[in-house]
Image 1 (cartoon, rainbow, N blue to C red):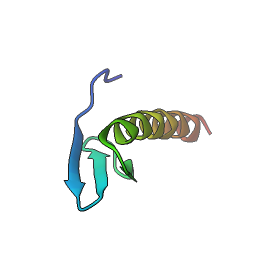
Image 2 (image 1 turned 60 degrees about the vertical axis):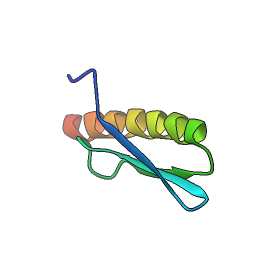
Image 3 (image 1 turned 30 degrees about the vertical axis):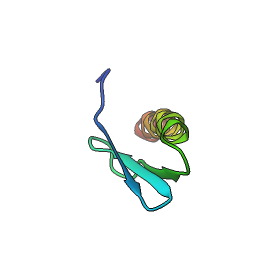
Image 4 (image 1 turned 45 degrees about the horizontal axis):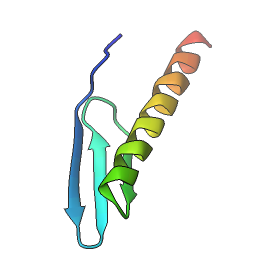
Length: 57
């Protein structure tokens, strides 16, 4: 399993938006850069776990 992923983050007006390039559907927006980093990490972990569970079934 891959241990590193590419997070793309940029500011768009008052918001920070970002996504993980290698995992479709992992995208978030937050008011601050730090919040965005945290949210992307949590969302990535949830997506990977969901994909693992889906593959088992």
